Length: 267
Picture (cartoon, rainbow, N blue to C red):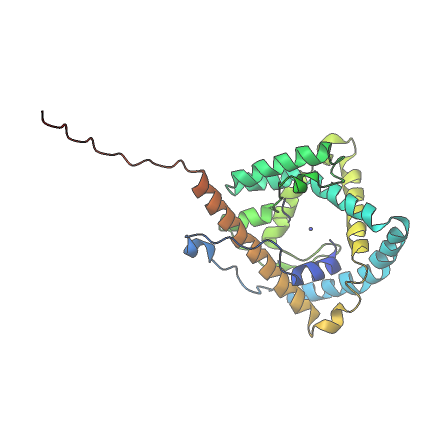
C-alpha cells in the first residue's frame, strides 16, 4: 500500500524527493522501459491558474493556519500514529492493486501487515509488522493502469486536489470506492470527507517548515512540480512492472529436467 496521496504543497515536497524503494532489475528490459508520455500538458493555462490558487491561497491562508493549530494541539508522535492508522485503513486499496498487478507476494504481506497492525498495533497506530519483517509496498489503481500499458493522458490540476493525470484521476475514483469506511459507517460521504480533511491537515502539520522556502529553490515552480510528479508516477509504474515480473517468475514451479533412463548393464 499504493495511491499511491495531500494537498498540492505537500506534493511539491513528495514529488521532488525520489521514493525510498529502489527499482528491482529484471531480465525483461523492453517492457520495463516503456516510457510515459513526457510533460503532456495541453491544459497548461487552466492548470497553472489552479496551481496558483491551491498553493498561494488555499495553502497559505487555510491549510497553514489550521496545520499550526493542529500541531499545537497534538504532539508529533500522536500525529505520526494517526498517519499510520490512516495508511492501515488503505489496505484494501493496496491489496487489490497488488493482485491486479500480479504481485501475489506483496498482496499476502499487505494482508499480514493489516492483521498484525490492527491487533498488536492498536488499529494501526503502531507499525508492529515492520518490526516483524513485513514491509509494505505502495500500489494504487493509477499505477495498475500504467502497469497494464494505459498511458497517463493529459496532466491536470483541479482545485483542492493534488496534481493528477487523467489516468490517475480515474484511479483515485476507483481507490475511493475501495475505502472500507464507506461500507462500515452509516454516513459514508460525511465520514469520508472528514477523514480526508483530517489526514490532509495532519500531513501538513507533520512538515511545517518544508514549504516555507520552496519557491526560492526553483525558477519555475509549476513546471518543476509537474515534471517531478510525472517522473515520480513513471517510476511507480516501472517499479510495479518490475515487482510483478519478479514475483511471477519466482512463483512459477520449477520444471525438473527429465533424465533419460540408464541402459541396463549386460550380465
